[in-house]
Image (tube, rainbow, N blue to C red; front, side):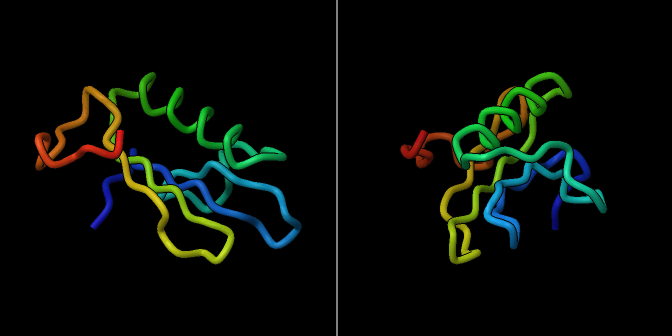
Length: 82
């Protein structure tokens, strides 16, 4: 179950990358690279008070999850990825 402020970075059919709120119908921003979309999503999450950032790979599978502060990380000691 995702909260409204959580964001997902995923690839679009035209090859660009989108930064989208999980409860939105349209993308917040579209970027040429995955890194650009991820950076924009992190910035937006910081500005809105934190949340979960989900990054999907080219195949559409979840590649990475990260809690952006001040969001609450359910298992902070085990989150060694970021």
